[in-house]
Length: 377
Ligand SMILES: Cc1ncc(COP(=O)(O)O)c(C=O)c1O
Image (tube, rainbow, N blue to C red; front, top):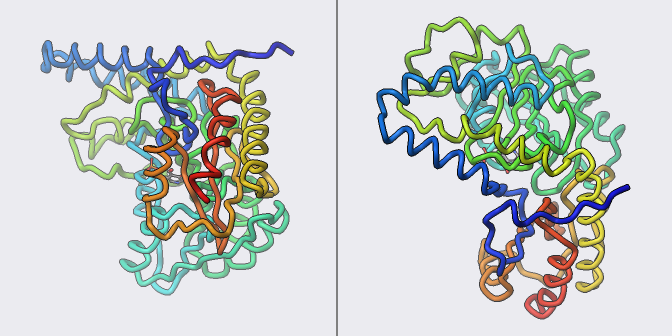
């Protein structure tokens, strides 16, 4: 097996900073930034001409992104982010008064807020299923399936954010559909980490291209099962309101910066150049080794989440570390160690969530491990 070299040269990231949190906001490669800048220059050379060409360019981009997900382009729409995808799903599904919106205690905070907004609107109840961090796939399915009576919808993560755990989405969709319950899959982290991530047949699947595929921010996808396509409407009411074609209806969102959506396929070409199918397992080995090095330095361990994603790991923090100051500790690490990391928590445990992308090397994790124990002491 060829060992692929790290490629920080493809990015414009500050070389004096340890970038170990790709999972939050991604990082856009230089080439994609250049394509996007070129598009914006074109837009401002003649806005009238630009906006006449946008529809065809969006179609091309949509088809490329749908092909990357290996999903039917007829059910694939562009949305600004996973939060928007979940909101579209919840505004489309019928939610009866007295019914239940079921999610887990690993759900992303903003997705929980969306569930609460729609529960309040329709007089439904939000049900929070507790899933132990170490739960295996069978346990996850059993715990969730047990809570699906009278459910209007199950919202489930494909890869959780705070706990970096892969959920068995295919089995969960099957269990929910057996009980007649529609499923929304929050696949915010799934593109480029899980192949054909929307293949499980959920009613709605949404995922971000601006995370692991390193596309420009505000580029996400929504995959809608055939039965919901005619009822699915974009969040912004615009000129495509009466377009009967589902994906096209989501394209035109008024006067808007479409450059990120149009430039996104350039990042897919960068992934191809990075030999992504071969690189991803190497990034898995890298993040595992990096997490081991950091855990050893901190005198803790790497959390057992049963089924971790390809490129993220949780390193346990010493129990003495105080995270009650919000972002204060993260800001200290950023300023004093020139390192970007994120802290997460679950139940009463606290973690650092480490990421690995093609610009990282083991030296990044080693350097963090040299400085962090002293800063946390
Ligand atoms: C699991 C999960 N869901 C939803 C989101 C929201 O994504 P966005 O902020 O792009 O809407 C995130 C973002 O990190 C996430 O990790």
